[in-house]
Image (cartoon, rainbow, N blue to C red; front, side, top):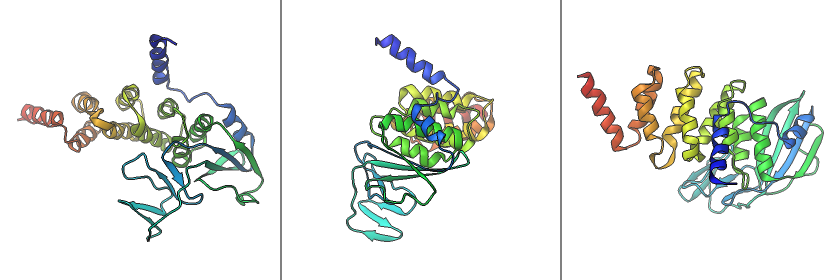
Length: 276
């Protein structure tokens, strides 16, 4: 594929406002009406877990703990308020248990490391899909978040999938009016963690769209503030200068104030000088 075709494909993905097409794996999960669907897949380098409660992403400066039981304090690991000097952290695989009730997803539970116990999870009949492609798992999990919510668990499970390019589906979810608000806000947050130049424009467009839900737009402004190396500062400055919604302007100015970027100070001076 030549460079022109590649960029055209990326532009089409960014411009897409509908939900991503249903994947074959998502269709298999949706076929189950009641019970638990299990799948296993490889995780990104640096992701590890104890097979039960603990998941960590070593690619981040401060690590990442999962489910609220674990806290990372510098190089120390605390579990339920107790310091652990050494903790077993196995580099995958990811194991996801999706509980279905009357055709809808009621719970998504993620583990890294370990293996499934005999007898399942105690949530009715178990359908084990075995080991699946990590990119396919990521696509299916984002599709489930768009359809049935449970966004934080499903999207985090997608984020740690090995070799998965998640941002196009997350951007489509963030712009999907039919998806749950919590799912869309979660998608915007995770976009802020992984977005590069290609996704920055899409997030800014979401914040600009006056037809969008106010909460989703404000989350998009926050996402711009979280882009690495102050990539979102020019877009925040543009929103602060010209967006017609006073609340969006205030949010953009607030996050610019947290950036320590000299361009933000120039904007503040411009606004204050104009108003004096």
